[in-house]
Image (tube, rainbow, N blue to C red; front, top):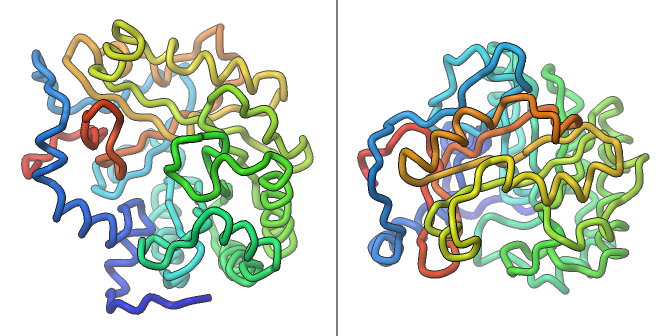
Length: 324
């Protein structure tokens, strides 16, 4: 397992594992912020300064990816979501995340991204696939799984998310489905060997074609989907605003056939008051159209990637960041 060449403090790495995007993303974002802001969406009629989802007593469970700690004191949070590259990171800092979750009675959802967060060290899609099947990364996954086995919080591992996406965002996406399935099974077999009892999440984006990537019932405890609502994007692509239910339904209908508990593993929304209020009210509400929906997990940070149509990097954070 390659170690990070740059000097990064243990405390900083711990914050990364608690949800913050990697330092290379942060540096890149800081250098390009003027460009991004120039192309960012213009949203009017916005007065809401805290857009966290409403929690309903009879609703579904709620979790968060929360690098800013906005949900740190909220008792209704069931799951703490972490993002973890499988190289260039000190895995000992997972113990910090575990202690944080344990003190709050939360589960851990650990998304393992099969690449380096340092863009200078990333492999091409073909290189990653070749090295993975050659066994070069078995040691990386085994090290992660071995650490997971030592954690005290209940853990769900989510590996190689949004595999059916064709945008080029992830180097493991849009592989031949049989290759992805073989890679997913290989990695999750290692998790089961090293950390028996760990739950597994298969997590497509929710796009047509996702079913070809299904790895089989024996490798899926939960299905995770990604659901984001950005008002200017909806206006361009859908000719009007979409609700949470409208955004979730296409992906949900594609995966409901597997009869697995379904999560929204990544949720975010941004827009005017009139746009985000329905999302806030319904995201954790039980709905008859989604009987298998078990939990939604909010992505509480600015998007790492720029959206199409020159819309910049949407800020999904529930508390408005005055520094933006």
